[in-house]
Length: 535
View 1 (tube, rainbow, N blue to C red):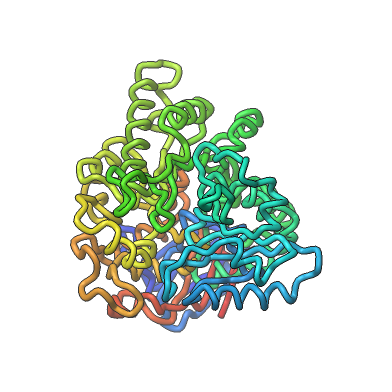
View 2 (cartoon, rainbow, N blue to C red):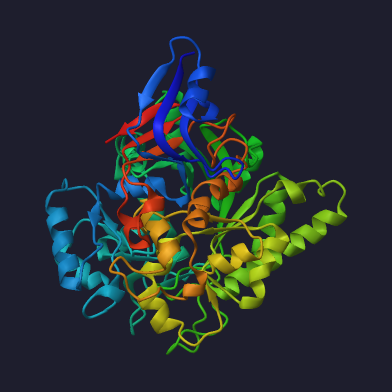
């Protein structure tokens, strides 16, 4: 096993015992020594290879703790409506994309955001029928919680005026009761299943082709929140020796029984592919007016959002999963949804602590809340008290500034409150929620530090008391992500015994102004001691 000394670098280890170094000795996929050049050379075996990093900066490999990698790679080959400024512009893109598809192909894609259109009109099936009259079209919104479909897709999905709304979903209807082509939350599940099928191409090949994009922005590990098709694709890549980064793979709630029957438990697997928590949706999203809020939406006195999984059912699922050794990752955005999740986790702990057979699961299972966007101030300390990880996406905060300033102004909320959560002792793990946001973690680091949009607005950032320093932001994308996947002993810091997962940057993040963090680039990405990507 050949030793490699990476030297002549500014190494930020994120290890409090030795924060800085100039060289690192790697043997196999482990770090053997971190220190000065002579120290590492002396520890190296005969014939050790030396890699001169030319004074560049080194950081631990970055971890995205919430990404939909299947949706992300598939979306790269579908129509992308992000950045459109009007319905007409969106329809023009759809028409161009449709013209290049085979006659019998479905049209997939989306990521439209009508809030950013010059005239923020809600699209409908008639609009889509104008440019896509014959082939079925399925186009989720930017937040993924509203699905826009045409008449052909409604027919193929079996949805008409007589179709009842599913539990946790809404088929939007016109004044005659006919579906408009907008499906909210669970009403769009069948359409999403098609987006996970072979109709969208070969997922194994799509991942193999596009995962290097994640390596290129410094990601060495991801926590994937997509479905069982994605798990199967990763298993295929792993079996072929073609998995280039480490994957903590969640279980969709629809596969919980299968996971229990197969004996899966959170943390099972090896250093490359592990089983994660079960993902359970409890509400929707702010932009779709479906996240579950204590107060109704302005101008919609009867709309508090949608409880995608009602409270009693969620508690039942928490107990069921926990009893099988499977942690829970609850999607919760609204303050009422977060309160419901925390109450369920608290009751599970109380029950487990009184049950000798289950008591050992309380410290072992690390339940999570995905997004944790809007909390009642009184609920902020509960995450630390219950040992619940806040899995947050900093760029949601900055992307949502126009929404939150309009929709949540004057409400007593702790929104995107990562500083407040850290101050109470909670673990805050950061991710991107790609393809909702760009997967580049430096966009997230910039958002966590500045709480500003890319153009520097608002001055000082939104809720500036929640800003982080660079150390804390990097911790969210490294050690906290490792903790959330039960791997804090393996990664997240650069010290002897840890996995040799690290990135090399031409510009030192600690030597740039906060506004420049978003534009940092990666020169080299190393996973397990092997260069997996190089600019």
